Image (cartoon, rainbow over all chains, first blue to last red):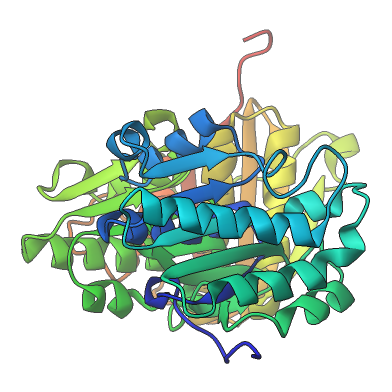
Length: 289
Length: 149
């Protein structure tokens, strides 16, 4: 089955074999965290396979307001390396990897979980691993395991590092294509939705010429508490600072909390606008994390 | 906090300094490049990361004002003199008001009009504006770190 035109990570459900292509680590961590958060909230067993250490995975989730501690303790969640699961050392065999997944699905059933979610960072396939040419066969095997199951798999590919031929060869085995909803992107500025915690992410340089794409109305429309992630924002001018501050005040006035994450230089600009003491608004710099 | 002055800074007297360390023309399409140049020169002058950002912000706001309310284009000059980094933005467009003056120092929230100049006033150590028939020239100055500091 070919991947559809695109889905939100929050829409994934049983039998979904999703292909997430990401362009930067922050995007990967955000979408993965949302996938995990929703799985845990649904009572599913969740596995996160990546090069990130278990402690690093916990820290990344905690940074996004997700506490996986209780789920780890009761065996509902696992954060582990791909080595020893999908591959053995520097050797990969598609049949063995698909067999491992089928075994995990069966184990989750025995443990009483209503379903399974697996997030797999495919970066291991960029390393010198024998059998990596079996990657398409592995993706096909996943699709077979998931058929009729209550499991979902999120395969994560770095679109800057995987060559287009490889991406094209595996895309057809996925049922869903997932990427962050992007409101605006050009060489200087990228504005996209953030999923965990909910809000928007603004990266690059933002000046008055981009005030239309700023899409701050989206943060108001999203509902609930909002995070504006500006940690990768290198510059914001006076007019756009005012727009962000104004949106934050509007949201806070509606008894919703607003968290502005930004570099200390940008935080200083918001402090000059008097945001530091406004109830419901928190300005957080990397130093505060 | 800035100290207002009635006249823009004179050019450096030292003939060897007549060659501006930075002279760059800009318009709406080159503000990113202008910011990059300003940041690089501020960093080379020894300013802290925060002050480099402040210099970049001030240069941008002055240039944006020239683009939006002046001639639509202009020129940035930057040099160091007498313990200050000087950032001079000029444009040949019509002045928004006559005479000389200083950027506004108190702009309450909500601040929309001239907010860019308010930022200039907030973060520069000295600044001045000269409006005239030839256009507008704004010079912002940032104190350089003391030698050995």
